[in-house]
Length: 140
Image 1 (tube, one colour):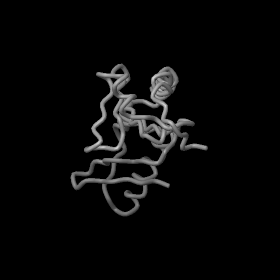
Image 2 (tube, helix red, strand yellow; image 1 turned 90 degrees about the vertical axis):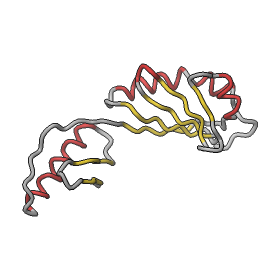
Image 3 (cartoon, one colour; image 1 turned 45 degrees about the vertical axis):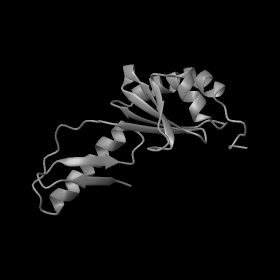
């Protein structure tokens, strides 16, 4: 399944729902071909990945206030604005949203191979997560 958005000047804005970079490129090429068949003047060029999204779940709940206090200044939590604590990984230009349920959403990586480094970093950040472990596990 391919989801995409185009703007009137002709640039493809988003091409999502792919798990591998090669699949995304193939999907974008197929979309360009479909647009050509509809009569649009289309040229496939300058393909690039600008964002990668990853989601995982910890086997325990996280107390966000404790997590944020233990990881300042790289973690912030504004419950009035967003239900998750924000944890920034500067060297990868990635942001991890930590939810109280133990769910993590990682965004902002430029290349899919950064996901492997983020996976390693997430494992390294598990001790800070486990020190802010909630009283009840929501995953049982």
